[in-house]
Length: 310
Image 1: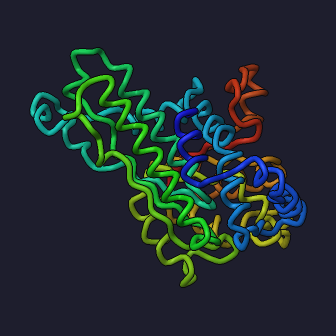
Image 2: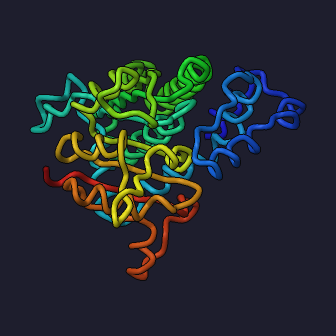
C-alpha cells in the first residue's frame, strides 16, 4: 500500500501546500450532518488531496474487514481465491471459475473498494504453496464504480488504477518471472449513478444492468450523505426507499453487500428493509453482542449482507 500511495502522490502531483489548503473535510462533515451528497467535484485539488489522504484508511478498513472470522467475510474471500492458469486448467475441477468477480462500488469515488479487493486477491494468491504459484493466477476483479460526480472522479480513478496495476505487476515479476504479469486481473471503470433516484431512473441505467450479474456490492461512506433522500418515515417503522430498496429487491441470489459508514443511524432501517427482501446480515452491533472482537483497524460501523431468498 505504501508503494501505491507514493506512486499516486507523484502521479497526481500533490504537494504539502495542496494538502494544507484543501477543504474537503468541512464539505464531507456538512454532507453527513445534512444528509445530502458532499460535492467538491469542482475543485480538482480537493479531489486529488482527498484521494491521497484517505487511501490508507479506506483501503485498510475494508481489507481488514474481509479477514474477519465470520461466514460473510469467508464467502467474499472464497470469491477472490486464485484460479488455474489456462495451461493448468485441465488439472483442476473448478476451471469453470475463470469468469471475473463482478463488483459494484456505489459512491466509490476514486476506486478504494477496487484497490482493497485486489489486494485481498493478491494475498490469497501469494499464500499458495510455492509449487502452485506458477499454475495459479490472481482472480480477475472487474469493478464498476458508480458515483454522482463520475466525470470529476474519472481522471483520478484512472491514475489510481494505473498505480495499482503497476505495483501488482512489479511484485509479481519480483516473486516469479516476467511471464506471469497479470495485466488482465484488474479492471475498473467509472459510471454515473445517483442514490437519490430509483433504479429504474435513466440516470441509473448502467447500474441496473450491472446488478444482473453482480457478485459483491460495496457501499462505503456514502449512504448517510444521502439519508434525506432514502429514509422513508411514512411507515410506523421507518424503512429504506428508492435506490437502496430497489437493490434489495432485484440483486441476484447469493449477492454479498458490504456497507460501512462514519455513523450508523440508518443501519436499523437497512437491516429491517433488507430482511424483508430476503437478505440476512451481520454487523458490528451483532458482533459486539456475541462477545467477539471487531477486526483490528477495520471499520467501526458496518453491515455485511447476503441475499438468500427472494
